[in-house]
Image 1 (cartoon, helix red, strand yellow):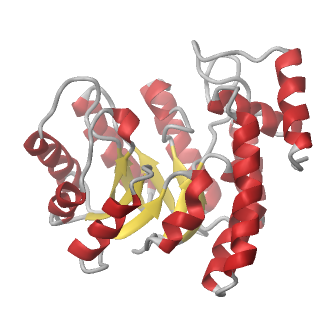
Image 2 (cartoon, helix red, strand yellow):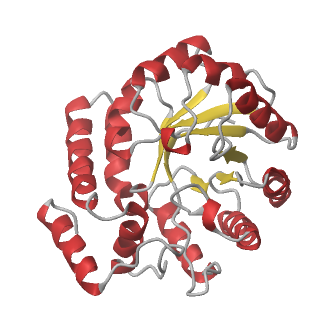
Length: 291
């Protein structure tokens, strides 16, 4: 399976006790499907997967897949600081019907290239569905094209979420894998750059509330309307600039709450926005043309 198009890195709706708000999850998924989402990245960084209880991660995967009914693919992020738990989450995602699993690199401790290779190989070999590498420099492992291309040789490793501004390395990865690796752009503010460098689509946080503009970038790019694609990308970048003074996950949840989605707060101890914080955020967004 090749993933293409625009795929929200899904926000996880939470109740006050940090259990999954299934009703809000269903509303969010259905509305994003209606808005043209091409798939969903679930329990990733935006979805707070690493901060959720393992039992709630299972509920999130089960309910998301149930709601989607395979109308669009569900990619379930399964990394955990407990590697045995990551294996269990991978197998659970497959059993639930996920189209793919994904994982950040191993976290916190120092790992060399062989360690990272063996980590992805073991995860990929635990299931029979595609594995998407999640490369984000913030996770502490600096991927190169050569390193990602090596991991791509593992059976079931088919894709990478490239959340880095190093587009030279993305282009090198595309060349080294002869265009066969499914490369997905990560940075929302540089989606057009990623497409131009050869990405097949994008996964992003702000897709949760700017899906129409992101679709504009993708569709205009593929129609050869580069000036129009740049206009959409500039609008997206302005919104992201307005958000940046506020932590991204609490900000995204506050924006969705303002649109009627009961997504709740971010997992503790992430920042709780006051009413004044929310008002200031929405005012900044209004100033740059988002409402």
